[in-house]
Amino acid sequence: MSTLHNPRSTLHALEPMGRGTPEVESLTSYFCRLAYSHGMTAQKLADWVVAHFEQSVCQKYGWHQRSFSSMSPESEQWAAWLAALTGIASLDQHTLAPWRAVLGTPGLAPKSDRWCPCCLAEDKETGDEPYLHLAWDVAPVTVCLRHKVQLATTCPHCQRTNVRNRSAVVVPGYCTSCGGFLGDAETEPATPEALWTARQVGLMLQAAPKVAPTGLVPLLETVIERMADGRPSTFASRYGFSKSGISHWLNKGGIPTLKAWLTIALHGGIGLDKLFAGDIEGWEPPLTPVQMSIELPESPRAGIKSRELDWDTIRAQLQALLQEPEPVSVHQASERLGVDRKNLYLRANIETRALADRYQRHRASVGAQRQARLQAQISNVLDERLEAGYEGMSARDIWNRLDTEAQSVPGIFHHISQVIDSRRT
Ligand SMILES: [Zn+2]
Ligand SMILES: [Zn+2]
Image 1 (cartoon, rainbow, N blue to C red):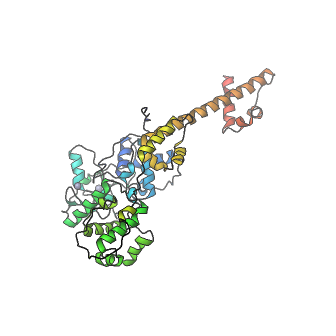
Image 2: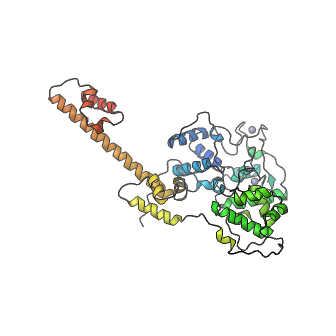
Image 3: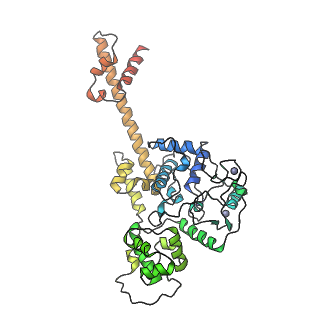
């Protein structure tokens, strides 16, 4: 296989922090560090990215009012845009977007910005760039597992809240209001319960879930089967859920909140990472369930579908598209392979950017050829008319003598004037 041409990235190929660990960096933080590395404000970079992808900008919209690290499609879009511009794949792992199919929204977003002062101080001491953790943007997490302290919300220097990243200019770790170091904040020790929750969410954030949206009901059915002998009403009363809530999950596409999953993890004695990986084959809840004779025609595990695409094959297909004589755009590739464009940039970054790069070069050269053809045609008309003894030709005279294709080129009168002017000098 030939080596793949990896186009130079448009923005710095900044390495994200803590990938694949419970201390994974949030995309908000990555974005701020990226802007800082380019000597730009976060606001300016956000405006530039939006303009680059030709999206309309609402001027009043502060960049920090956009959603960078959440479960929303907008976060996923930003991850894909930044992956396209930096050449760093899988930036959606720095958002909660991969959990959209398994986690309900209520209670997920914190009411104000939090951080662990000890983590920031440690980054600074060891000479690393302080960064913000994705876990700090998950509301049920209230403590730092590493330092066993509560997360802070108030700047120790100016006593203000929401001063972590809600400003045009952000340097992660420093107050956006007074510029003081947020790692100086004092905190209280964490409770064991809060540490348990932080540990669960940390395990969850290490890897994207593998349960497909279609696999959620079979997973929940297995949970209810193992924890309450398959009886939803017993399950509801035993673990403090409402019966209508359970019915909503099983029959109406409802998605359990993180708090509900934590309840399942706690009482079921199973990690969130295992639950979301659908890795529950040998799972036995700690409570001995009342034995009931339930007929199970097949293993419940069989119904839990994995949504993993075969990326090795997709990459090979993209490489084949790169070899086609006619350059293929990312849009066309996405349609031919039936894979979303965002995912192509996130999971097959080099191949996708190579396609985009080749297509852009092709477009540019087609444009240049068209331009050259047009100028030659204008020159010819001008030569003919001058030879025939005409002087002082207007642009409109020339336009009337061009063919229809040339006449329809945008800015045609500008091109004609340019040729006329070049003759005068
Ligand atoms: Zn910490
Ligand atoms: Zn401050």
